[in-house]
Image (tube, rainbow, N blue to C red; front, side):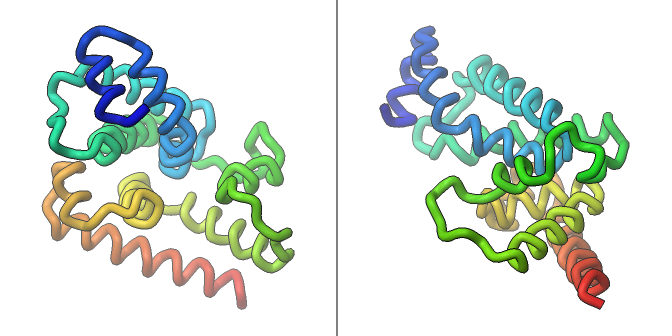
Length: 185
């Protein structure tokens, strides 16, 4: 079922449309929220909250636009709120899951050849570097490189000036480059 049909069903009070959207976007929503909150339970809470808010506010959705950017704005907003509330650092060693489960969760689910040890190490260094960024910088990195949003879209979705978005991205890139270069030394 297409997003437009699912949205139409939700607007009519039929929750089958919501089920369709949950099945389509849940994994990516939890993943995006996780990259910001760094906590799986919080990421799942943010995604669930975003689906509830989307269903409640579906009458505000413009049917002429795609659903995904509108929905992920809600996900990012909720994840940022949770991350700011948590205000704690979590290392990979402190997670409930083992690192291998986390790394498989962060890669594309499409079948790929067995990754090399070096690729796994780079991915882990990058994840650790992203986790060390402040929540706003993590959010813009996720929005730009995971959700593939433009800077203008990010500015509109976060209700922040374009200059702030560009500054956060610049600082995030600079910090990530420094952290990765330090790891190689």
